[in-house]
Amino acid sequence: MHVFRVGQRCLNIDARSDEGVLKMKRWMTVLGLIAFLGFGLSARAAPDQGPGEVVKAFVSGIIDVLEHREDKTRLTDQDRERIRQIVNGRFDYAAMAGRSLGRTWKTLDEEERKRFSDLFRQLLEWSYGNRLNEYKGQRVEYRKVQFKGKRARVLTIVSDGAKNTPVEYRLHQTAHGWMVYDIRIEGASLVRTFYQEFQSQLEHGTYQQLVQALQRKIAKLKERG
Image 1: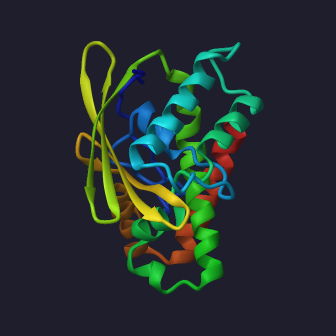
Image 2 (image 1 turned 120 degrees about the vertical axis):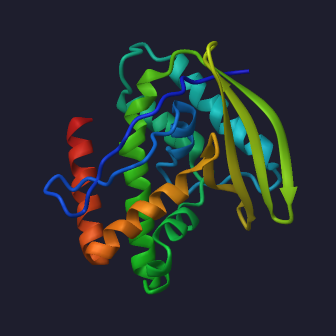
C-alpha cells in the first residue's frame, strides 16, 4: 500500500480580476493531484484493464517516480515527463471539461471543445502538479470497486498516520478502456467544484473572458515552474 499527504488549500482564479484567478472551495489531496496529472492525451489505457487496475497502475507508477527523485524538493523536467508517460490516457479530459462547463459546452463546436479540454488539462497540470513535491510517503489503501453499468467507483483510503481520508475515483468505460472522469475527496467532487466556479464566472462575464482568465492563470503558474 502507498499513501499521500492529505491537506486543503484554496486555488483562486477569478475571471473578473487582474490576477485571472478562479476561487476553488477545496484543494484536493496530493493523491488527488496525482490523478489530475494527465498531461498527455495520445496514449490510452489498455482496453482490458479493469477500473481498479487502471487506478492502481497510475498511482503506483507516480509514487515510484516521487520516491526515486534525487531532489525530493522539486520535480525536474525528466520527472514530469515520466509522470506524463504513466498517466497518459487514464483521464477523460473532454468529459471532465464538459461536465465542468455545463450548458456552455453544448454551444461549442468540436474545435473549441478540444481547445477548452486542453486548457482544462493545463490548468490541472500546473495548478496541482507542483504540489506533488509535498509527497512524504503517505499510504493508499484500495478498498473496493463498485460497478453500475459502464461506470465504476474505485474507493480508496489515504492515511498519513493521523487521519484517514476517503478518496473516490469515478471512471467510465470508453472505446479506449476505463477512464477517470471525476474524483471525490471526502465526498467533494472535483468536477462539481469547477462547475460551480465556472458558472459563477459565466454569470458575470462571457465564455471568452473565462478562457482568457484561465490562460492568464496558466501562464503565471508556468512562470513559477
